[in-house]
Length: 152
Image (cartoon, rainbow, N blue to C red; front, top):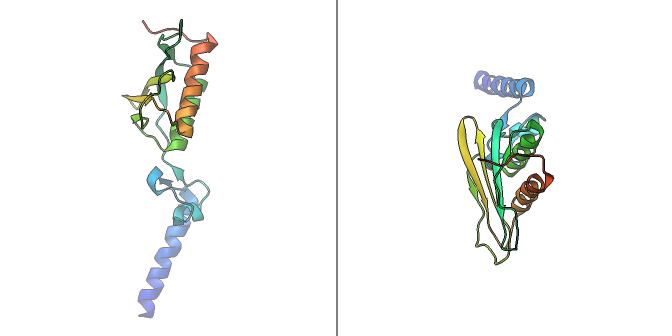
C-alpha cells in the first residue's frame, strides 16, 4: 500500500505543479474561491467571452424625441468594455433580463458578434441587476456620445 500512496501523492504533486505552471480556466458556474484551481494559481478565472468584433446597440424610452437609433460599435476599447461586463457576469451568449418592463423605463438591446456568432442582450426590467444597469449605462454612453455611426 505504501507504493500506491506514493503514486497518489506523486500524482497530486504533478497536478499542483501543472496548474501552477499553466493556470486554469473555470466556467462561471464553477468559479469558486474554495475550488482547488483558484487556491493554487492566481490565473484561474471565469471563462472569458471571445473577442467581440462588432456590436449594435439601441435603446427606447417612452419620452418625446428619445433617440431610438441603432448605433454600430466597432471601436476595440469600447468592445473591450462590453467584454469585461459579460465576462464579469459570467454571460457567454444571449441574455434577457428577468421581469417585465416598467412604464417609462428605458429598454436596451445589444447584438454583438463573438467568435463568428451573433448574440443578443435584452434589458427590460423594473428591478435591474448590477449587470442590467451596467449594460444600460454603457449603451446610454454610446447613444449620447456622438462618436458612433447609426446602422443603415
